[in-house]
Image (cartoon, rainbow, N blue to C red; front, side, top):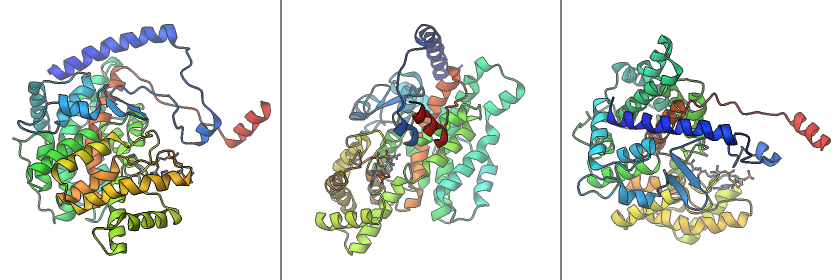
Length: 435
Ligand code: FCX
């Protein structure tokens, strides 16, 4: 058995036994109380699932297995001489809870290279779609088409014992992650470059090779891709894409179909599509104002006009966070290191000053601060990746790392079918009348 798989099942078996005795002793302890406004309000804050790979603190932001993003930048292995962490290292950490060595990360990079072959029929499915099909639609269809390769679906069909579900889930997770950059790059090149595809360079790491296949041969951009793929990977379990993968996976739908479903959730403008919406918002603003370098006053007026039209300011606000998103701050730090002089980055920084007080003044926005999506587009534009309809695909490739590691845990821990309770408004009225 491969060393990561062995480490994973050793850890998961130990935790499974621990959970069993914990539930035997404390299973009836109350962990939460639900009020009616939460029932009508998108289930905000209700503790209702297990997610081992990361945890989101409203003030401190995301912690991957307890580590903040600045800590990961210090601790995770990088390319020789590089500054940004390799996403392979984050996957290892999320899967087994340990910071990997350089050797372990090298091994994982090699594993993903070995597993990266994408069957021809997936490209044929993509090629049969109109070229103007939204890249996220193409992405979902390609992942669904790849489901023919699912080890889990095959083993289930053969009658696998439920104690072994984790094994083909791990294989599918590793194979899917390995194949995603090729699929995502194929979508990019067919959509915007007339199908002029770039073959993989197997000497590169996972994110570096992705950058190469996109066609942006720039070391700084590849560093950005390593950072980008690391910080977008996981945001605990309740966000819409992660929760969808978790829910669909709980039916024992295989990892490919579960991930495709999650990507449908990521494609919503209140979630992952916000990264395209932010840059669209910025481009439209620059167009309307007739300048690449608008003043803060001009930006403030434009923001107010947007709000008065009943539209949200994309990239701002969050269902859980109550401070500037550390993922925004990590991208800002990258921009401070590499592209201080970029006009579009300056616009993002001016928005950071202008938008929060305006949102605060509305009196209803719980978090006026920027989220991860407020910064990413400006960095991509700077390096020439200006086709913003594509941005959510990048988010999706990264998100696979977290949700696939978490899915391995769900199957190894034997988590059951998820099935919360819904009620009707009639039931609510009767409930109130009985009080
Ligand atoms: N601009 C304008 N109004 C906003 C706002 C924003 N950026 N953020 C929140 N509000 C409004 C809400 O629309 C809601 O108004 P309503 O009562 O009239 O319906 C009110 O403020 C209260 O919402 P709040 O409780 O603060 O936020 P929610 O938990 O309901 O929603 C999201 C959180 C993220 C959906 C919301 O802040 C939003 O729409 N932001 C813009 C889209 C965005 O950036 N999404 C990406 C989020 C994330 F990082 C990701 O998943 O990628």
